[in-house]
Structure formats: structure tokens, C-alpha cells
Image (cartoon, one colour):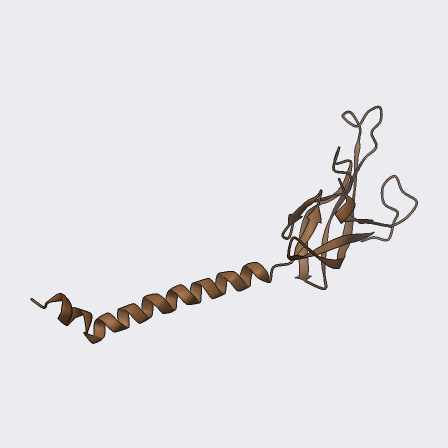
Length: 148
């Protein structure tokens, strides 16, 4: 049986040590780059990554876009499609009727918030060019950093 001193100076030990150090450093570098290069969006006062729902009025969620599928996402902006939803709040918001429209959406106005690149503005447009429900326009937009 080999002594610890013989094992410590063998080529196998050096290869094992180099592999462990290399994997550890490589994993750290990969994870660090992934986390620091992600782009976020403000959504009801919280930073979120590729949300499937964005709310305009956070108190009652009366207006928003859901079922979002993103086609592009980067620090310059994001684009996708989803379903616009609005509550008519008649006779009250609890008992109101929901109206829907298929929309395209664009996120823009990147700012650094809490050290992270964050998109802070949303623009939506109906896919069929008709007016949004309960609106006289096919478009809507709002600053998301102030939502809530």
C-alpha cells in the first residue's frame, strides 16, 4: 500500500486537484455571468424575469396583460404577445365583468435598479387593430416602475 506522501505526489492526485479547481472556477464564472447578464422588468414594484403576467393597477389587478409569450428579451427591450384584460368594475370590481383582447407588447426604457438592468415601460397594441375593450384606442402604455 502506498503512503500518503507517495499518493500526494502522484500524477493522479494532481489531475484530480486540477479538475476540482477547474470545475469550481468554471461553475462560478458561468453562474456569475448568467445572473449579472439577466434583464428584468418592474412588475407591481418588484423586479421580475420574463413574467407571464404584467399588471397595470396592482391594487386590484383590474387591468393587465396575461398569457405572455416572449419572442425577444434583452437589455434594449423585449417583445411578445399576450391577452389584455380589463375589469369594468360594474357594479363593483369584485362583481365586474372581464373583457379581453389579443395584443402585442413591447417593453423599453432600461434602467439600472438594484444593480440590475430593468425594463420599466410597456406599450401594447391590439393584434387586430380594433380598440381595446372599454377604450377608444387600440393602444395603451404605462410606466411600470411607478405601478402599484
